Amino acid sequence: MKFGGTSVADLERIRRVARLVAAEKAAGHDVAVVVSAMAGRTNELVAWTDGAGAAAPGLPASDDEYDVVVASGEQVSAGLLAMTLRNIGVASRSWLAWQIPVITDEAHGKARIEEVKPEKLEICLADGVIPVVAGFQGVDRHGRLATLGRGAGDLSAVAVSAALRADRCDIYTDVDGVYTTDPRIEERARRIPKISYEEMLEMASLGARVLQSRSVELAMAQRVPLRVLSSFVEPGATVGAGTIVCDEEEIVEKRIVSGVAYSRDEAKISLFGLPDHPGVASEIFGSLASANVNVDMIVQSHSLQAGAANMEFTVGKRDAGRSVEIVESLKDKLGFDGVALDDNVAKVSVIGVGMRSNTGVAQTMFRALADKGVNIQVISTSEIKISVLIDAAYTELAVRALHAAYGLDKA
Ligand code: ADP
Ligand code: ASP
Ligand code: MG
Image 1 (cartoon, helix red, strand yellow):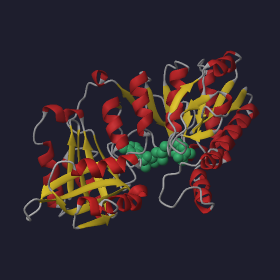
Image 2: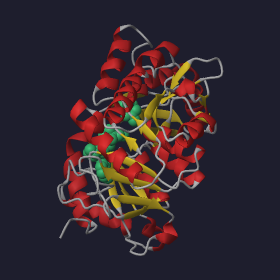
Image 3: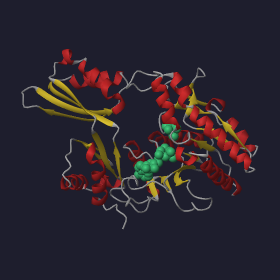
Image 4: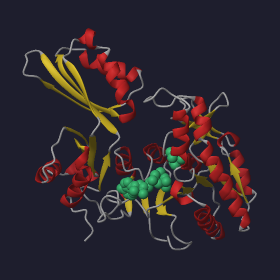
């Protein structure tokens, strides 16, 4: 059972979580728990590290002391929940990542889990004691704390589930499942009872933050059945609710489009008057890759000028300033006319496995956006998704229009 930040936001909610855990235990299950920091705490800790100069502004934190600070939020909530469980007569103890250990690589701030050693947790469970694991953290091979990236409490939960060969990993949050789009933006969004790993992975990586994308990737690879449900209920009330993330074959009712996602985390960089010859893209994206910048959407087109091309691509907002500097440093070598940065953009995507076998899916999207007067700046597609980049001011309008256009609205 994994509980996110809003589920453990205060002592009252921690008591409710303890009742949910106790009920699961009383029903005869062995339970391991993973917790996030109390809501808002990680942001506060990150802000402190920014103030202390953890990493140059705009740089993703790669500082091992950043991890020491921001990992502490999970230590507090793990201890508080274990304490609360004991208070209602349920044997429990907290586990920090280094005690288990959860072993990661050394990419501080976004470390990858290499291994979760199950032995100590197994002994704890065998003794009838509920382990409460601090999520989001690990320890590298030098014994230094590492954090796994924002939202990665979900990843910890899946990794612990896989290590313990759990029957299921239940992600408790502040919504009662995965919806056709963010219910905060579209009140007509509907809960999806079952969704495939693949669609969930696309939804998550395209911005639906209800599950962190690497957690879905790991669940898919390790075949961990995932369920998303609300912790804002009393024990017993969740039966039958929530969303199950499973293999595509297990889903009977298939839709062409299952969901709409959005992200305001990207910025667009435009390059004008690039020489149109082999090696230019390799030079640009090679330099960005060496600096650990992830590039998402890319378009290139000929310019009116003979032998020249224009290029646009998107990067994470945090990397935008740095990316422009990198590109500008190539100006003499490549000889282009200019660079522009626009961080007032949003990526809106429609996702569905049914796209594989249906035509006209993109046209429905373009028509719906055109009808609302929303201009499309960049388009990218894969087998099961279509994404467009638009002016950020139209994000909500576009999400609602697409939600309706694909018939996802609640009846
Ligand atoms: P937690 O703190 O439990 O990890 P998150 O804030 O990370 O919770 O994720 C839950 C939030 O995800 C919801 O409050 C909701 O606003 C948002 N969300 C975005 N897209 C979706 C979606 N398609 N379905 C459900 N929730 C979504
Ligand atoms: N507390 C961490 C964060 O806010 C991890 C999580 O909540 O999943 O990013
Ligand atoms: Mg989350």
